[in-house]
Length: 296
Length: 296
Image (cartoon, rainbow over all chains, first blue to last red; front, side, top):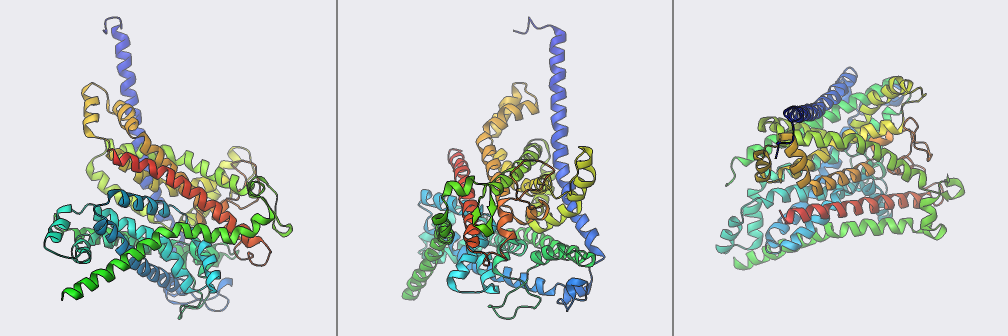
């Protein structure tokens, strides 16, 4: 078959193959390492830019009068507001999301088609951008006669992160062996006992991951709270008061023409980055820690 | 005892059914809520006029959404062109060429990139990309530019989409059976040829879906793009000009929304438009993914 191809031609073909192989190996390696470099670049840059404006006052003081003209104060209002909103939203999302995920995996265990349809819809819901949730939350807020407040922010963010809780938790529940469910069924447990005493315990690492992922998304999201939570220099005490959030604080301060205020935006960005880094490292660490005690 | 168990079973099942129905009804609710709010606009202008007209004069009740839709498309297009090759190459590297240990190292990198809030990307864009474009890139092409351009939006968006697309691509490539690759290698194909002719060919529905979902994600991204894209109403496509994507329109104008008549309906209409487009893209491409998973 190769007889009509000369030796040199074949050698050239081999050479071309080898060059192509090498080229794409290098290219793909470059692409991957450039991702690591980009991440390092972003984080290091944010830290360098924000570090010298960062002080204990930034973290522990609310803005004083004249703060937006370079006066004293910090972003405590935004930090507290962000924490309130994302903790509240995560709580609501857990109350809705965890039973939903358990329902899909326990009660619907025999209905594969229904399971997949529900997953399909929730996945599509996950893809809806946060600005749409923001707009919807805003119209819901007007419909219910509320003002821009902590509560409205919490509800909007909760809607945004519920699909995340359900699908992340569900992905882990999927991998639990069917035998566990069947064994406890055979011993005469009710479905709710299976859900909460067995499947939930076995899926606990997934629960932690889902919780922290949702929390991180909630604390970092700006578009959904832009309409609904409002903005204020005070630390919110009641649910019907407006609340500042960290991403919005960064955004507003960055558009200021005064350099000192922009410096503070960078410092606030450092705070937000640190929070996100802690959350994602904690998610990794905790889910590993709890996986060890699982049945295999 | 038995009654108590039955009672708990019933109560928890009700709770579960209730929470899952809330989630499943949510997309419908969002659609209806936004439609009701946008309805006054439809009585005033037809759907075709709204989408195809390019005059945007809210004070004179002229609402043409074409500049914003085009703005979104331009930014998304650039982001896609920049991120798709990088994602494909590094997914190939991670699943085919690199060691397992490197993959373990890479996981947190991708997670953190995906977890960083969009405001942080926006800050990074303002510090790095915008001056880079105005000081180096634009003079290189002999153009004067402020740096707040469609190109800047596209670059920032590309970086934001990479972890999202990459995660899905890794999943796709991992489902390609090892036997197929081994068969190809044993026939004397090089690694790259195997990737080119077997892995990519086998994974093509998954790859297309991953890219499609990436586009949907880019289309709806708000804060980061809005911070660097310049926000000027125009329909031309020029890399070094400012643009005005659809999500930025909603986020930028929420303040004056209630002071100009019909303006709130117009903004809600743009949210509805965004919601419908992204939900449709998601439903279509997720359907692809579910189909391929089923026949695995």
